[in-house]
Length: 374
Image (cartoon, rainbow, N blue to C red; front, side, top):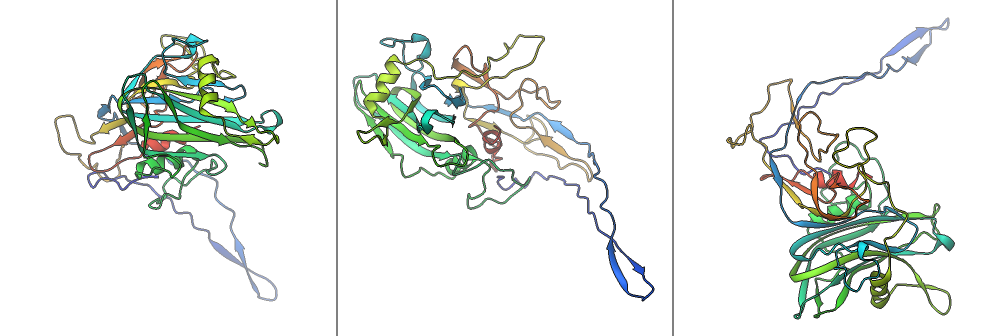
């Protein structure tokens, strides 16, 4: 999905029209039969253009970034920013309090679980203080893969009604950008002193699907009146006395947080930033990244308020989400830094999932392009 482009920016598109020609052959009865000529072989057309670094920078709003392990088989802790005291597995907790504005992104799958059990994703928020804390849910959306399957969209498509999306993350972000808070999320949570509340307690069902694979992407913009800790957890549905499934309770989530270990299986361990040889593995993110929005200026240089339109036949481009081995000749790395992380997860928030790229006159939705990359 792309928003309208600023009037100061033109994108020149080179189009190639391929026209089928028709010939006629005359038979002895002089009847004419239309004959389609063979389709031309595919051609590669190269249009040289300048790729510029994207002026601007990330803000400092922290992002609760839960994306490892992506495929969950063993229930447990996905990401906990709780302190380590009172926890059975201290290494599973990163001790990072949130206060004021912060964002939350979580994306995980369930794949062929035992007995096709429903996996639940929970996000628990805790108030460590002595006064009630108000957590405002500014925007929030969560979608299953079955409700927003991964599809390939055209390079450009109008999406004024929000009905064009290429996956669950794309759909969730589209809602948040439109200021939507889904009905199953509260306007605010009031968390009493020393207590916790569930912000998310949603299922990932696989039973009755053609393939027992499903995932859930959730994205929220939040604001707390004082310090809070947050954790995302994975737990299989509990059973009622009649053997039907039920949603885990707050007490059950709390017990998993206090006594559980990290969920599994673990993703590939990333390559250290200073490595000079071997295969580069970025890894998946589980931690708190720094920056929810990139404020960009499309100008000729930092001292100029204008962008000069390129001459006819020439073009300029700006890259979004550049990273260590994908700088596209700009020498710019836009990847968000990690404030805290687990040792076996990504060193940086590669792909900038959940980051909005914003220009003063329009919003180039790099946030959508990021979330649709799997």
